[in-house]
Image (cartoon, rainbow, N blue to C red; front, side, top):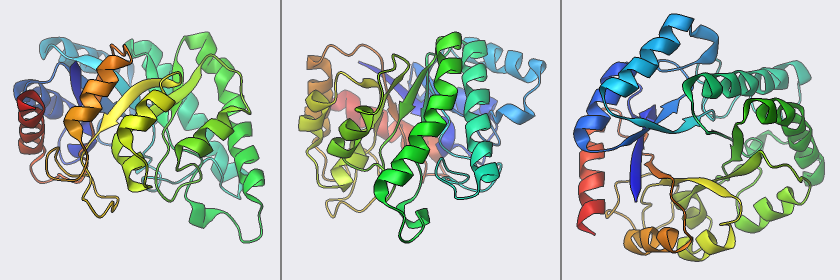
Length: 276
């Protein structure tokens, strides 16, 4: 099994510092955060992109995925979303995603991950759920031809309290599409938070899954990313099940809350994984 670590835990560090720390911790892959201060597309020059490539080579790291979820360069983790009422504001998310597709192609990445619509609390009172899903679907439809042209997979990542949370909601949404460049970023902890069995959903969603996020979650199922072994998820069972599906890509550890000492979190996480 190949493990990567997301740079979104290294938001207090440069990309070069993050890559070195992740490599030293023992990972062979890195998920690059397409946001400040690492790789926000609007702020990257050709020289910046070349430096990212050189940094990856220097640290013997492959790209597991581009994280095109967070937009703190504009506002925060979830905004602008795909379901903003203001069409111009929503367009910022759409254009950003196109730019991330371009960046993925230039870096040689295969996938980008994005939010599942946006926060449920942002859906206007009285708006039918299907209307919000339609708005999200329209936005995705506008960028998928570009993804196909560039050979990049766009992966929706269900999350608690966002428009698409559960496996059934994801599968229902995918019935609206028949596009080879749209898939799933399966975040193990997110499904655990909404009461699902991670081992069961791995098989249930395997036909759509192109990348995995992994973290542990407290036994309360509160949406709080913790180091594997410190929560209630059967991590060993998850890894074994992923292997049984024949998946041969990266599993990326996503421990973004550990801003003060992300390298220790990375080391503790991979140590647990290798021991179990």
